[in-house]
Length: 318
Ligand code: GLV
Image (cartoon, rainbow, N blue to C red):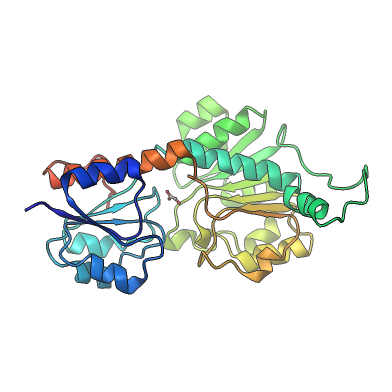
């Protein structure tokens, strides 16, 4: 009897077809409600999850003791209760590397577009609010020559820093561990978080969502930033207190924001949707053909390895 793989929502064909050729595959669909996922996972050997699927005790219980692997279709795995998985002997895998460049490029795009107020400018034009060329209007910041502060210099943060280096930005970073290689190759200087917040023109978040990074950017952090600073978040929503960012934008204490991820998504608070100088995208950091197909293939490679009794290529350390 072939093994059963339960895909809580969807997996793109680049990975799905490989699984369908080998295993019995159940698919919840993009809109699968929690009840449906609880049902779907029953007796499965593998669960394929994604950032919108909380994998907790209840879901693991619903699966049953035969569950071997939770393969996350994402590099971040804050949707998964790692301890609950470890307690049951369930492996967890993710999809690193293949989305590094796509996500860093979106962070760069948000940096540039927020710094030039592109959402406000475009919406003024579309709504017929453009009175004509005005030398004083929409004057933003240039990335070239700016101090770019990278919070979290892992794979994506490092790639973002490399891209900014192409714009001759001055690079600083905050990280729990020093990155001597990046310091050498990128000329990046390590600062304490407070110092980075106070000196950077651009602040880009590339840290995982964990209890110690929850609301890393809150009202107190925003008091420290320069009033022209541009905040960019392509990591995870819970790192940022959105109401505090909206208030700082409203009151002119923050120059601009480029956000791709939100606490409690897909709900996005009215405060930030109404805030000026904010470019808001719907969690599309890894949304390129190359990255998303690569992620689907990586999910399949992890599932196939585990079900064939081999070590998965991308285990998440617990
Ligand atoms: C997407 O958000 C990811 O973590 O891969």
